[in-house]
Amino acid sequence: MAATTVALTPARASRRWGHQNAWGYFWSFIAWVLAIFLFFPVFWMVLTSFKTEGAAYTYPPRFIFHPTLSEYASVFSGVQSFTKPFEHSIFVTLFSTALVLILAIPAAYSLSINPVKKWRNVLFFFLTTKMLPYVAAVIPIFIVAKDLHLLNNEWSLVILYTSMNLPLAIWMIRSFLVEVPKGLLEAARIDGAGLWVEITRVIMPITLPGIAATALICSIFAWNEFFFAQSLTTTNPTMSVFLVSSIQSEGLYWAHLAAASTVASLPVILAGWIAQKQLVRGLSFGALK
Amino acid sequence: MTSAPPSLQQLPVDRAPGSVNGQALPRSVGARAEAWKRRLPLMPALIYVIIVTQAPFAVTLWYSFRRWNLLIPGSNKFAGLQEYRAAFDDPAFRQAAVRTVEMTASAVILAMLMGTGMALLVNRKFFGRGVVRTLLITPFLIMPVATDLLFKTTIYDPVFGFLDYVLKPFGVGQVNWLGTHAIGSIVVVLVWEWAPFMMLIVLAGLQGEDLEALEAAHVDGATTIKTFVYITLPNIKRYMELGVLLGSIFIVQTFGEVFTMTAGGPGTSTTNLPYYLYEQVFNNFTVGVGAAAGIIVLILTEIVASFALRLLSGLLVASAGAG
Image (cartoon, rainbow over all chains, first blue to last red; front, side, top):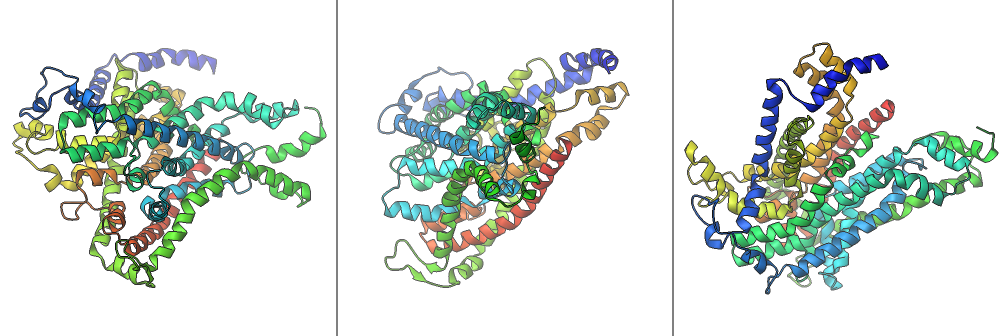
């Protein structure tokens, strides 16, 4: 076995680190072309955000212009300032994600390490709730919230985003808990470790990266959510609703739209870029266990 | 291992997920207490989900038997199955159902094909791989309604849009993309948004690949295509199925794209079920029809979901067998 591994090492090294053959260069080239092509709309958004409105509407589209920060300044000032919606989105995202983790971690524990009898059915039940048409659920919530004057209350969005993200979070966290070696848990129990010690000393250190990945994905979905926010808020909107309403009422000024979109997306872009590996890890579902 | 009595009794029960040993225990008081101890951590999440997601449907079911227009006071009356008939008789509703299937299926399949291609491309080591992967995942991170508005304006605009500018050398004149190719234009945006998500899932599958097997194939002189079909594809197949399932769950709920880019139009050509239901309640204020249509959608969804879950159940069993 060891001999085989040694013999294979040069071949593997060439596959992983370099491409001596023409096909290798070809596929790398294709990867770059595809990446630039797919990234272009994002690049164009950022470029347009530094234009004046006059420079944004030109034919042919302009790549060279005098960059200005005036649209960014206008995004954060005046009646149409994004400051309030930005804070509002942060509040809703943080609280719903925290609530998701508080509910999902114990539930996932009950479906993996110390499973209830019908854990499989329970797991599927959670997922079916994700398939329900959101709109049909939002009708009574809208009517009740309207009658109780709870429209525009940020907690109604916190509650809905929690239920929206909970199924996926339970699935993801469960897949990480399954990865905790059984032997380690048994050893801890034989040593007389209580549940608390078992969780804080054995389970948490192993699953923390996975839980962080889950939190990140839940935050992305909460931050970007539009439908519930559009249905249940008017005067106290989140970023997504405010972006759509302010842009449409102002008559689609492109440079302003681009600056506002960049601001609205920036937190998630930065988080996603920094935690790329976590994203892949989170979506691996613990190698589908 | 010493023969400590408590661990001997507990271990077989605690050993593995899905262990049937728990059922074999005599139904003593201790066993029942133990079962509740297991259930307890599950309860908050379960109760929460039932209250927030199931209770509204019970209310929606109640609304669906009533004729109720929010703008007409006193219009909230029992109407039996009339609103169901109204929904079924509405050609726009049937059309919306067809549109939903078309949009979801084409967007999911295209996003998966593209995402798989992207994952295969960045799973190799090459110059700037990290940068390429960063660029490729970014569309997933942009706020979807921002994407929708930007595509609607800076890309699809018939006069100043970038798409017509790029296509002009190919003889394509000022095309009103969202007017003449509305569904295709929306699907393109959905694919752009979701292909990175598929890429991340497939990438996770590729990273669990057995490098030894790949090397063995390489040494044995297997072609790239054969290696892909016989080694890589079986490995990532489960991830692709999972991606299709999750993608369908998300994309079938597509609302923002339709709302911001076409408002269901031109005519009702891009009205999918979520947008149709939204219009019934939030624009026409016909709660009864909206609720009845919602219940029909719910039943159809349950039928599709039961097939999808059977697939997923297969995924779980397969991996349990492998591990």
